[in-house]
Image (cartoon, rainbow, N blue to C red; front, top):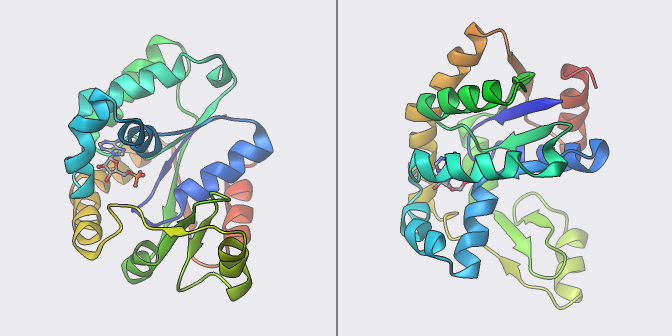
Length: 214
Ligand code: AMP
């Protein structure tokens, strides 16, 4: 299974990629996560991208292509992968196609997780990660029990640096301008599948499984 997950920031594609990874033993390759790791580790790459990411802009195509190329060379990608957050513009999609063709592993599907813009803003501005469990929570949508589980275990609710209103607005605009054209790109290649990304995580996941015929 070689798939990419398309969708606006906050559409929940990362959450769905994580579930696919657990159930099907496929690596979730998330460029956003790899870049955040570089920032946390204080590497040269991290220093280069920190400001760009905090503002919600895209980092250079070359940087993310290098990350993807390296991830796809890892042995755990041999039987498939779920790309989450890559590609994000037509140039990246073209590079990915060339890269996958060169290793004879073309893409199987591009799955769009479709969510209304108003919901996206609430999902992003309310998003927190528990510092102990690493679980993603939401101050608007998570139950009191889920939030307390983190707090009671001594955890803190951490907000991503780019989950502030200014950056969120910019990220959604960048998505509309640069990433949305990928919907047509993959439609023309007969690879596009679309699911409704609203509702409970488990319900969305059922749609993912059904649509990908897993
Ligand atoms: P994400 O975790 O997918 O929401 O990505 C967080 C941020 O990382 C984005 O707002 C960009 O600044 C950067 N980023 C992640 N993936 C890419 C990509 N494919 N191309 C350029 N920038 C990216």
